[in-house]
Length: 216
Length: 216
Image 1: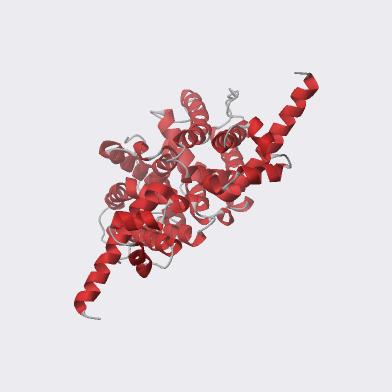
Image 2: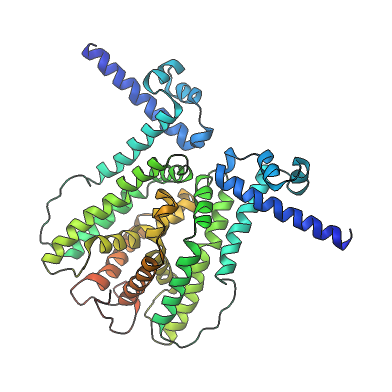
């Protein structure tokens, strides 16, 4: 195939994926149809099937692309350089970043859809878990091991401590969005206060410095 | 209607609800059919419709009955008497109870199903939120206000502190079960260790006593 044909094929695939994302997020897996995807993408149904052999294949590709995207934005796949700035500063940065990337309507919709389909597509639930919380926790744990060596943290098991930090930070808002929808998502001011208090709680329990009791 | 007819009617209603619960949890709202509910309940489809006028009505009743049941088991509707035992003992008791009642396959399945249907049934998501996390948090906040008066806690806002405690305790396991299914639910030993560590973290941040850093 010529280079131009390759490019056209890739572009048409991207257009179908974008259309499919919208259709699946709107109707869910069972409610979505390949007709509507074709219609929304402005291509024929045959073209959709030429790229994706079934609704199931297309659904998987949409979910995997969306979960990978968030991890990429957070650059969780990189081995980020660790420095010796205070652990509190590092945590505030991570917390602020994570709240703003993860608590977005598009990702919350994806999460609801995948959770509702976990019995039918257990591998997609697992993929979202691995690309979502598990990746954030692994990134934190790597930093916590570093801060333990610097004697700024006292974490017998960095993975356990990272898991607590992750859910102190993400638990309330993620779960509210799951059950109450995206109108429950916090604004910037609320997110900043929550990041501060989450870091304070965590450092009270796992920090090596004497932490002020009533910062918040 | 005679008393006996009333009782029979109530019994038949309960049988249909039980059958419907199983059918909805297995297939989800869209995948479930009134035929299968009738079949599973051992009654005619007309009998099902005599009690519940549509699949939607039946779905709502099933979800509301299931969410109310868990709150009842935790006796969260009672104004429980508060005493002056140490706050740590109170928290361990609440934590242990809550982990064992909430992290049950039946409730986790319900939660996944309701999350997947939040766009179609926002009121059911809200009902589960109110009967679930919101009720646990209100119960804790009432106790925290009491322990603040006893000078055992330093919580500027008892609801905020109760929300953090709730998600330190419930965040990791609930979310793992949402995405990984019920095989991710923790066993008794893991639940006990997690209850201990959750209480330790919380008291480090909100307790008035000097808390040991490395209890766990």
